[in-house]
Length: 221
Length: 250
Image (tube, rainbow over all chains, first blue to last red; front, side, top):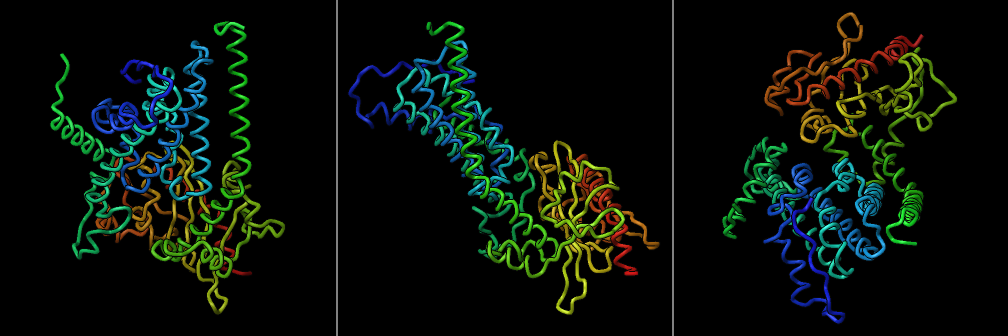
């Protein structure tokens, strides 16, 4: 679960749709408050679906849909949800959207749904989603919650795409299935480690390192 | 009603559950035809891939897959004794359901591919089994001698990504090409995936080139490999009488 506390609810009635505060909701999770590299949530799917860029992209889109819609609905219901069963209510909402995504993938993107296999269903257990619902949507109005959902999904998706890019080009010598090295006339043998989850673990570690070095992260005592 | 009262909670949860269930039921019902069409097409593509190769079928459009399947593949359903069951079509037989039956009482679909002179060219057999976590299945194409593997396609429901899930990749499936399922006396020996891995890719194929009954294993996925072995062995035995009836038409 997320370690961040419940943010203060927006007070003013007539706030701009894309004011400074709203833009921050989207931009913060992209870097300084990234769900994967800073909060270290949602690692399991980031390891599993980043062998190639195409499934990673669909996974990111799926998570964005589920997170945004769940945030919206939980935020709409936040004043009528009985607090004793709120986690169960959150779970029901999340799993409803996850099954929707799964069904839609199976109907319109069958190949992708096969590659993602169980990981679409595992969006339910993605800590990022439950974390945002509990930490943000339960205490904020619908519009900020939508922005927060989009922001966090973008932050998640961005890391997914970076990791998938590195793994696909090193592991299979291609980008989105396009054989780059073959086209350039270079005979490239794929790096086996990058195809395995171990490769993802290494790449994510390196990405976290690079980001923390740049942002001057200090471990709290 | 108080928001903290038990009855409020009960009503809230029931309303939410009914609402969510109705949405899902509606979506599932309306998307089912599309999903079933995808599954049927996938099956046709797998069958074609076993004898035409992944490189060819990957480039085929949806219409092309259906039309070349219809023109090339003839299908029948047989029983354990190799007798044709004329009342059944392959569409009516679910290999997944038959898998739960005893070997001897399974209804077995066969896909036969004839060349231009109406001579049997390939036979494609569906196979079904259990890997490490869940079911695995696939298709095996045999040459007209009914003992040399032309090609295989494997699929799985939930094998470990990066390990057991590799059975669905070319790297593993190519290892089966040219292997034999019968010994010199003509009895079924199947093809056995070994434990351990000798490098993957071409190295794995080369390491077992001289042995027609073994293929290289998958590192880290021994139990999935055992599942594949069991699956192949079971189904080759299921189809043994059919092979005999094909070799001796009388």
